[in-house]
Image 1 (cartoon, one colour):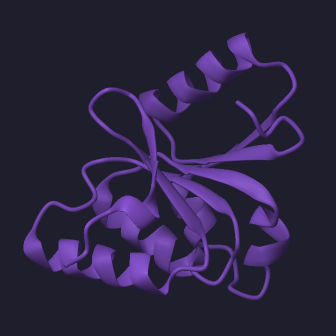
Image 2 (image 1 turned 120 degrees about the horizontal axis):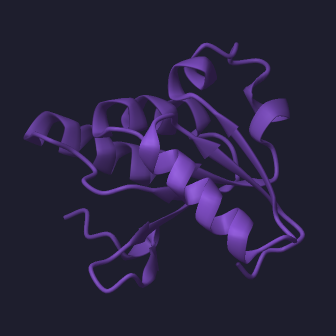
Image 3 (image 1 turned 120 degrees about the vertical axis):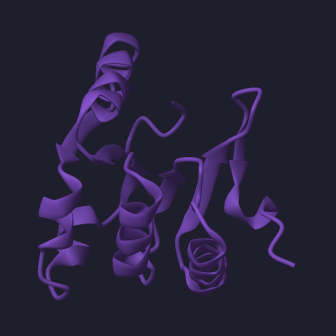
Length: 126
C-alpha cells in the first residue's frame, strides 16, 4: 500500500473483513489497521463520525445495502474509500449508489476483474 503514513479503517465483520486485515497485516507492517463492525459504525452519532474516520483510508467490506448506508453517512468526508462489488443488488440500490457517487466528497476506489484498483471517477454513471 503506497499510503503508509495513513491508517486503514476496515468497516464490516465476518470472514471477508478478517481476511482483508490478515493479508494486509502479513504484508505491510507500516499501516495501522483499525476495524469496526458495520452496524457499530452506523450507530456512531453523525456529529462524531468525522473524528472517527478522519484522514484514514476506509475499506467498506459489507453487503451492498449496508455499504450504501455507510457511504451515505460518510459522503461529506474527504477520505479514500475502497468499496466492494457488487455495488447494488437491484435497480433502486444502483440508482442510490450512483447518486451517492455523484454527491460524495470521498475518493472512491473499487477492484476490477483483473484486481486493478480503479477510482470512482471512472465509474460510468450515465
